[in-house]
Image 1 (cartoon, rainbow, N blue to C red):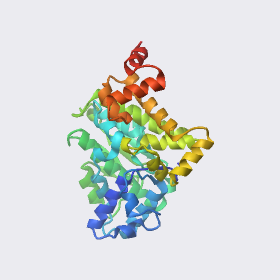
Image 2 (cartoon, helix red, strand yellow):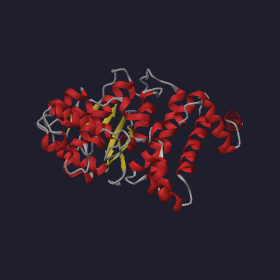
Image 3 (cartoon, rainbow, N blue to C red):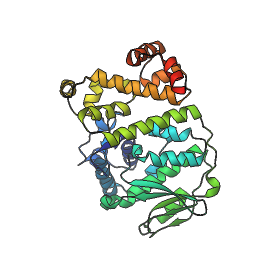
Length: 338
């Protein structure tokens, strides 16, 4: 796992900072040694590295007056804070599909561990934590925060009716073990071979009240693109494409991208020129790819696709798409279907 990869949205650390402030912890003290400022944390376009997240967790463990801080901050997680990743789960048909989305695209949640979904012989499902050797002093708090957040999200998507079958943790019971029972409301086991979140077979088909097949498909495809870009990024152009993809539409301009890459706009344009392209070309390539996917893989109306791609007016997307591909959006969709 690349701990220097910038994949952690600031909302997670901002939520922790606000909670600890309520508990009397100085935010600047929390951020010390992380090379982050409060201004950067307030910028939704700023991504943190996994190492910065780990450093802040270490500080939280030192400064928090309450040892169960990681469980508590996980309880504050809401689907709306997870962006397209959250909406892909929130619009799933049932709990099982939401689980697959949350595990498949876990990198977009900005967690410093790997996870996998396993099926038991009795039909139960288990979200199992992997790759924790690098966590050192924040091993327990990272798993606490992740599983508490995961529990909050699953309860939200099922209208508060979901309760885990059991929780398993690969470390000894802490002095505040009663908080685990309060948070998860199910049997909790410590000193296990691995950490796992077990979902009963009977809950797999729990319906998600916000199911929307069109939105779900569109959001999941965008998650797939972002994760693929993160895996495939090699040269500077690919790095810029990756940043453009994860930006909100109104932040997909050269100044915002340059800021995210910690360079001047002039240097951004110069480096792209050295690789034989321009920022506008990279931006158009991303927009074109997104538009093609929405047109070929969903039944969304062009009016709904336009803002997702970055156009306030449908007529502007129509003209741009014709310029990029030589086809109108409707013609392209018809060709894709046939």
